[in-house]
Image 1 (cartoon, rainbow, N blue to C red):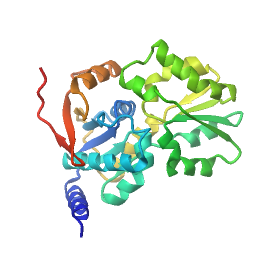
Image 2 (image 1 turned 120 degrees about the horizontal axis):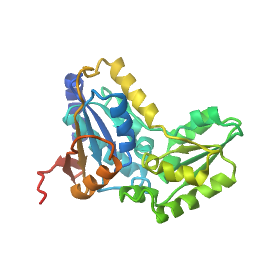
Image 3 (image 1 turned 120 degrees about the vertical axis):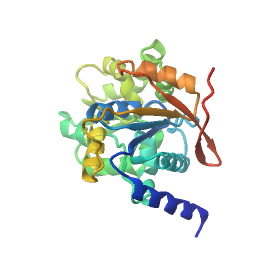
Image 4 (image 1 turned 180 degrees about the vertical axis):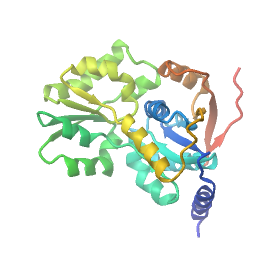
Length: 299
C-alpha cells in the first residue's frame, strides 16, 4: 500500500466518523469567483457555518492542465476535511470538470457538490434554439461539459466561447471599467451576432460581471447563473444525510487564501459590500503538494 493510499484512507475514515451537523460547509475556487456561489449558500442556508478557500497562488485554473487542477483540488479537499467540512462545494467550473468524479472516488464517504454549466435549463428555455455558453478552456475540455451537450442538446445549437482576461478582471475587482467592457464585447459579440437567446455563465467569476454582461448582450438574451441551483443542491445533500445545522443558529464564516491576504480582503470587501459584519481572512500556503495554515502577521 502506498503512502498516498494510506493518507486517503486515513482522511476518509476520520471524516466518516466525525461528520456531523456541527461541521462546516467547505467551499473552494481558484480565487474570488466562487464567492458568487458562497453568497447564494449563505442566503439560502443562513444557519450554516462555512469555510471558503481561494487558491490564489494558482489562479486562474482555466489555463492549466486538468491533471494539475486535480492535484490542487485534492490538496484543498484534504485541508477542508481536516478542519471539519461536512460537505465540500467545488465552486469552480474548471475544478469540477477536472476533479469532481476523482474526488468522489478518492473520498467515498464525503459528499461533494460540483458546478456544471447550466446547459439543461438554457436548452429548456430557449425560444429560437440557439444557446451560448461562456467558460474557460479547461471547462470546455472536460468530460462534464461534453456529456451535458450530448445528453440535452439534440436539436439545439450550443455555441461555446472562451473569454480570456475576465477571471483576472474580477480578481482585480475591475467589474465596471472600460477595459473590462471591451473584453466582454470581444467575447460576447460573436454570440449576439449568432442569435443566442440564452447565455450560460460557465465560470463562477462571471456573475460578478452580470450587469456589464447584460448591457452588452441586451434585454433579449437571458443570462443564466447556476449558483442558486448549486446552493439548493447543497441544502438537499445536507438534509438527505442528516447534516443540517440547527435553524436557530446564525452561520459563522471564515475565509482562506493561498495568495495575498490584504489584496484578497480588499477585493472581497468590494464584491461582498452588501454582507454585514467583519470578514476574517487567514493565509495558507502550499508545501510539497499540501496546504498548510500560516500564522497571520499583517502590519
